[in-house]
Amino acid sequence: MAPENTLAAFKTADSIHADYYELDVQISLDDSLMIMHDASVDRTTDGTGNIAALTYVQLRLLDA
Image: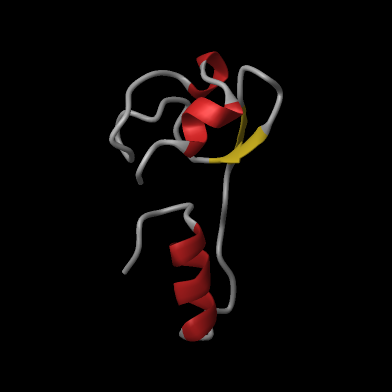
């Protein structure tokens, strides 16, 4: 219904009155908390690389 671990997914879960939803947190290169299941962005975004090797600004530019 929406890409996993995205605001769209959380809003969708709320709109269908889901009992709960799950999220994962990773830490970026500059110590920002990022909601993402995988350690890399390769599978779920238009970018490549490990979250721990990318900055918050670089990660915000990616499209899920």
